[in-house]
Image 1: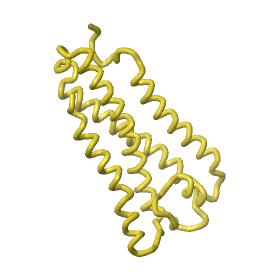
Image 2: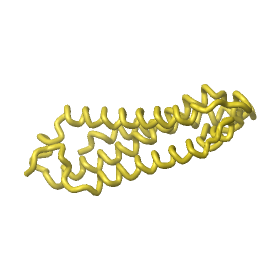
Image 3: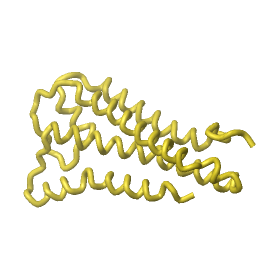
Length: 167
C-alpha cells in the first residue's frame, strides 16, 4: 500500500526545488530578474510537478481503496507492472498539461522586456508582459486547471475503478 509514498516524496521535493533555490539566490544578490527562458523552464516544471502531484494523490487514494476493499486480491490487482504503468501515466499527464499551459502562456509575443522582476515565475506576471490580449489565454488556463482538479476529484469519488476485473 505504500508503494507511491517515495514517489510522492521525490515529486514534492522536486516541486519545492523548482522555486526555492532561485528565490534564495535573488534574496542574496538583491535582484529579482528572471529571464524569459528561465521563466519558461521554471513554469513548465512547476506546473508539471504540481499537476502530477494532484494525479499522484488520486492514484494513492485508489491504492488505499484497493488495499482496504480488496485486501486478499491487492497483490494481484496492484501488480508492480500496473503500479509502474499508472505512475508513468500520472507523470505523462502532468507533463502534457504543463506543456499545454506553458505553450499557451508563452505563445504571445513579449514587448516590454526579456526579463521579469519577480521571485517566482507566475502566470499573471508573464501574461502582463505580453503584447497581445491575454484574457482569452488566462481564461483557457483557468478552465484547464479546473478540469485537472475536477478530474482528480471525480476519479476519487467514482465507484469501483475499471482497472481490475469485477469481484
